Length: 369
Image 1 (spheres, rainbow, N blue to C red):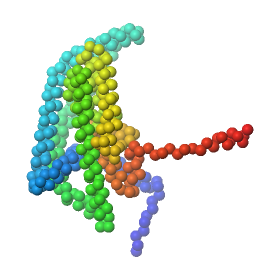
Image 2 (spheres, rainbow, N blue to C red):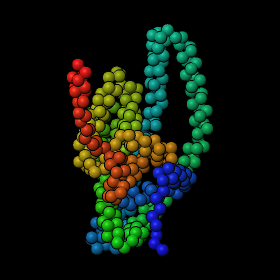
Image 3 (cartoon, rainbow, N blue to C red):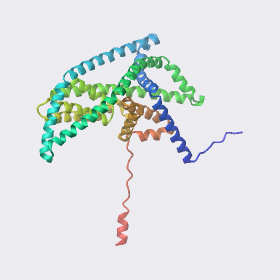
Image 4 (cartoon, helix red, strand yellow):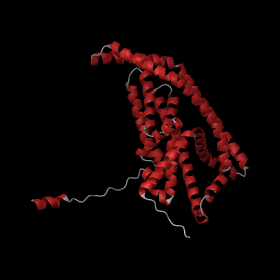
């Protein structure tokens, strides 16, 4: 008996799709302690694969090549962590001075607001004290969650290198498994798609790292020229936040502007910081991203914001940082599979040509006259 193709009605297909999507999201949320380290490990393994291939071309054993790559990566992360820790230590030492200056600015603002809006300063102070107490209560309730997050973060730090090592070592097995999921008639096409997608993903992720380094250098240089304190720390934070589109850029420029207001004698420095960061963003969007990150993986603004918010709701802060690379990987896969290309087009930022509407009203007006 020949197999019959079952054609389900549209409402049945959309129902199955929605139920399946809900089940997948629920599983990803429940199992985030397992999924998030694995996703981080996959992205890091894709980044490190070209380095492993370089050592393999030198006729070094595969196991030793992976070990050398991970050791060099550990040294780079250790140096970066030491730099970040030294800057944070310097920032924490100056924190009381910053709080005192912010308090002075706040009191001046209260005095000005009271005079301008004809409000008693006492009412403003009462509102500030009430808000501060609510924040303290909320913060004390969140301390336990923070400690739990730090504990899970330590577990992730220990698990990720192990996962990276295993993924790099068993990469041929994993790729062969993906090919064998499909029929023999499609295996050559699947191999080509996997190879092309892996290459483009590697170029994209390496481009993201290079972009972050360039943006951190430009941000730091701009802040040093303006004489803003903690320039290196703020430059690194700005580059990391730059990975999160739109939302990250706003937070990245807000931090140095606040430091400029608190540490400088005039508020003009905050505007100088805003102008410098705006200029760096223009360079990033028009030159760094198209040339280094590659124009093949452009995500439109709508889905970028949606996926960042969804990533935060699903996995918290790690989800915000993982959302854009994961969406880019999904888009690349869609672009290489013929039935999924419309979805890849939807995620991209290539605008179709707007159809010109013929002027039909002229004829109507003439006939009516």
